[in-house]
Length: 280
Image (cartoon, rainbow, N blue to C red):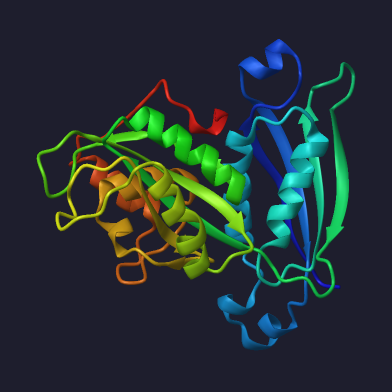
């Protein structure tokens, strides 16, 4: 089977069991081989027919920076699962190493292979915005806890405090969740997001800018942008760019990282330093 590879991707993250390892980030070396038929891309010379190694690399970086796993075995297994959710990937070989972890050894690590189960549908990935300006610390934490019961939460951005849009109400706290799910976009909204909003007391009325306990919306689903506000609203762009700075605006050709930096220069948004949703 054809192979697409990412060689010697160096990411800094928390990995290990000792107090020292849990207190500071360290280098983690990752090698990925993606198995899948690339003959169509060879014939067409079209990027849309390729296995998107750039996306895989960006997602790997975002995950490793936030996962804080105890063992390289668990981290490798997580990364293999994410790779198998990518279009065109039928199998994956993952090598995860901790350079300098053992005296006199260049590195230690683990290498695993996983393959997509025959006949099983590929899971979907989505980026969900979370926002609250009524008791936001409590409601964001509870929303994440409820999300984790319904879908696989891969990673969360930092929490950003931003000005409300369209009203003079309290400032919002916003974040973005990167999730995996077996549900399609409509089912995800109706069976997961809306019930969480209702459980946390979200009230919908004529004033769409009214304060709310929680607001959950799908921004991106299987790499398709569903909310165009991602390119113009700081409360969407800033947290999402932490997870996927490479997302491209088809209209302007700019990536989300560039858009977020531009919006930040004209925004009063700030990171909330003492609220880490990844630890929930």
